[in-house]
Amino acid sequence: MPAFDAVTPTGTGSRGARPSRAAIPHPDPEQITVQGLLEALADPVRRDIAARLSASDEPMRCGAFDGGVSLSTLTHHFHVLREAGLIRQFYRGASKLNELRTEDVGAVAPGLLEAIFGARR
Image (cartoon, rainbow, N blue to C red; front, side, top):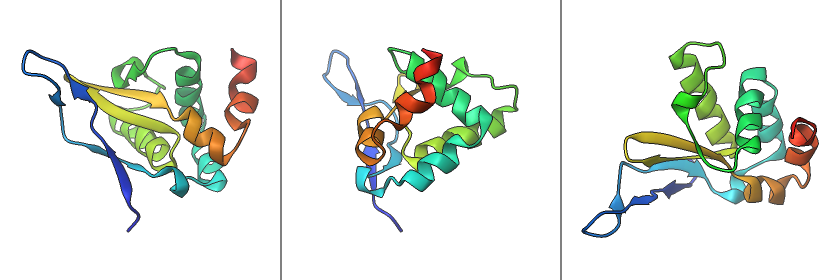
């Protein structure tokens, strides 16, 4: 079983930083492959999620995406994107946020995100 980088961004409060929820597993950067990235982006719903994240300056809540699919299908698409190493998910309070792993993807496939999403900006 591959090793995963558990990400637990912390919330702030009067008692200092503490994890807001259980860690969400993510592949380490060296586990990201070009094939995995391209397979994840082959689906139009996942490509749209990644494009919207690419166009955003801030992480986006899962609830901000519709995609015209059921909630369980949308959850599956987020899972595929996360397992491919395209997105990082973390909790901030009760919200699950998503952001592109631009640096990690760029190290594996330089220019891929710009080539796919550059025209949409």
